[in-house]
Image 1 (cartoon, rainbow, N blue to C red):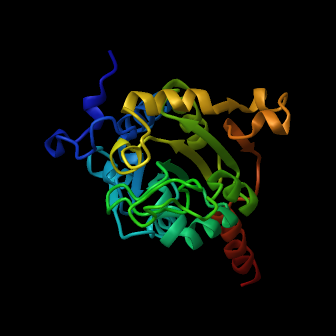
Image 2 (cartoon, rainbow, N blue to C red):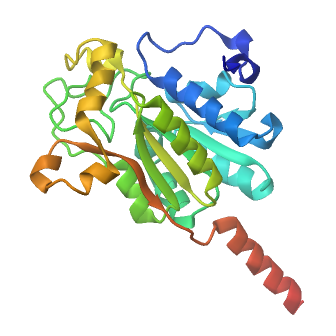
Image 3 (spheres, helix red, strand yellow):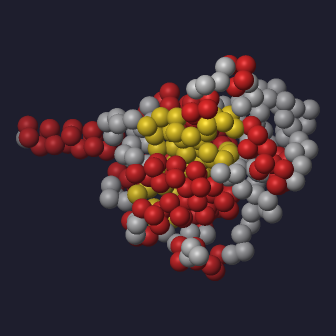
Amino acid sequence: MFNYESYLRLDKFPLIWCSGCGDGIVLKSMIRAIDKLGLSKDDVCMVSGIGCSSRLTGYVDFNTLHTTHGRALTFATGIKMAKPRLHVIVVTGDGDATAIGGNHYIHAARRNIDITVILFNNFIYGMTGGQVSPCTPKGKRASTAPYGNFENAFNISGLAQAAGASFVARATVYNAVQLEKLIQRAIERKGFSLVEVLSPCPTAYGRRNREGTPVDMILQQKETTVSVAAAEKMSAEELEGKIITGVLTDVERPECREEYQKLIDSFRKEG
């Protein structure tokens, strides 16, 4: 049996996550990925902002920062620039990263700095009152949209792809084995790496939208997602309402910190 306890701060338990929340599945998948890579706990730094997902940094026994709302990527950028040997992992949510933190999200991907982002997408502000997030599907209810959200939702993964990230993948908590493998690949890939994880929120989102039990919400992920390989063989009509999972982008691109070092070295040669 896998020894999760060696990676956890057990004095911080019990968890604050609601029963049926998918965030614990992400936590375990991430720990397994780090373990398989053989990374020392001292060589990993996890950074989070504010929200349900961002509580994760308090439970793990790594170098951790629990920072301000939407600013996790700015802190992570500073850490990577100052301590490039560290594997910097950002744990954030759809509200934290793409609402107040949206500008930082775009430009961290554009710079392609060597940071891994695990972005929990539960379609809502779960911890702070159930408000609409940039990823709340059109027509779905939230505390600030009691009659249904009228805005279009962000495509989180597509945004990172368009901005210039080296690695972009999407997964669900239903398929925890795939999630573990994608997190491992994201950490291994140099540059800005994103794994968007669809994680059900049975309390703030599920109840308002009558999504059923937590098990129902997880099984719904199985019905509404298709792999990249399967999607390539499907028509636009068949893909209507489906969410594509798997590796969306995996390319080598110039990495921000290395490009900055080249600039420094060029000045030293001139001097």
